[in-house]
Image (cartoon, rainbow, N blue to C red; front, side, top):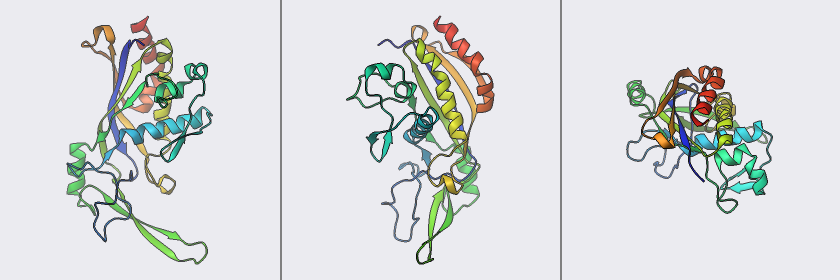
Amino acid sequence: MRLYGRLVIQGNILVKTGLHIGGSGGAFAIGGVDNPVIVNQVTGQPYIPGSSLRGKMRSLTEKYLGRTTGQRISQSQIHACKTEAEYLECPICNIFGITAEDFNWPTRLLVRDVALDPDSAMTIREAKTALPYTEIKTEVAIDRVTSQANPRDVERVPAGAVFGPMELVYNIYCEQDVTWLSVVLDAMQLLEDDYLGGHGSRGSGKIAFQDLQLTLKRADQYRQPIDLGHFSTLEDLSTAAEETLAKVWAEFA
């Protein structure tokens, strides 16, 4: 299958309510946080794994398009087409991929890990939060039988933090892939309206995409990227989505 080009979406992720993406608690001493966040083992700073971002986008898109889930991946279940004919018509399986044992087709969307912005890291350090880059939120679970209160501490990246640069890379192999770009934008909007990470039903994980830059790299002119525009918010990009997709179409016409 020939690669015709790549659309690169870069930008930042603004944390609007405390963000908790869980990490391993094995490195914490006795008396440490019950629910630590995932951190870069070199810098000690929290980050957003590309797998968490991509997985949430996929899950929300499956619900949005009404696709059934049934194939188990680790501790979750995903939608996976059973036949090649179904796969060729399915934006979810094409964009987000399926296991190699099903069909040997390339995944369209690549999502990279997103580091904590250096300026944001400095601001959090200067705020002298409970931990170097995070805050502690105490939640209380009530036993429905005994009515006993069970407090627990949840580590979160505080509201106002910025992660970036974010990078999503969308591979274009055929004309249908250009049409399905709108599904990627829908997935980003669905995520803004939902939550990322854990404890979302208790207020955590609201995020917003900002300072978005779209760049097209045609395979035949790969070292000459085409600027498709800068958008302050996802809403701005969504407003201009039809025009932006038309520009992509024009490059491959």
